Image 1 (cartoon, one colour):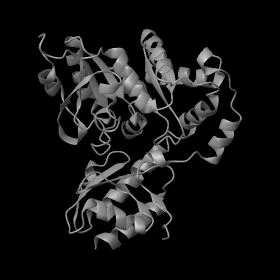
Image 2: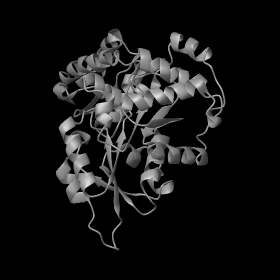
Image 3: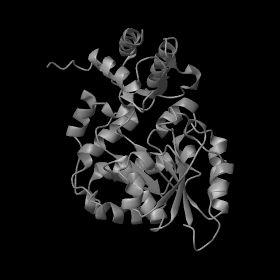
Length: 346
């Protein structure tokens, strides 16, 4: 049985490979013992991320999932409750980490396109009662992955943070794709992170680095985060080799996210006119295109037939498909994906 090579991979922006220039930069990186604070490249990255997000300090971590789980453990105690949208990454894609690693109960709330508002948070906060879990943390994912890459309006974020502060809750920004929000809106990363007690940025999605994320907050927060990093096996040694990839990405791969957004809109417009596709191209703000198929083929079958033609997307459910643009797919690749989709869906 022969396997058709993947010509256009839109499964996720996590499939990106380091560019030749990034690889050279990583090979030449100065390194030292990261655990002892002696790796100059890691130190430079942490300082840059702290400045980028407007926080006192930052810590380099192997993954965004570890950023999320450590943030939960710093902000909460076992039995506390976190308020998050029902589509939030920790609920679906972290292997039960909130329960297993932090002992945190998650109160899932709803809202269109992966977002909720201040009124929903106000309603979700538990009254003080010994029978209830204690509301402790409010969680925002910018951009919203399962919300189709939607960008939370700045005013809404500020209102949510104000409600949390009034009730004594902490706030956390899951900034896996926050740089996509930066490019889509012109609002700085520091401005997006300002209402939150902690925030992080991922280097392995649209920014195209092979490994890593960085979590930022107050000095006291990062001191505790470092202890948990050590405890959870996230501490490294000569990590400057991978930190260099992140530094390269921050220097060279941020502005080009606009190309991914343009390609996502191109893909969305092409898909929207096909029979059996339910999609509003005007809702595509960044690099994620989520659409429903209403014809005889269910989403897994559509995805399988696209793969037979060298195009990979992902099925999110019986009728929902997700495609994500990134630096390894150019405009010509989008057009090839659309050609394959026309064949499959017609």
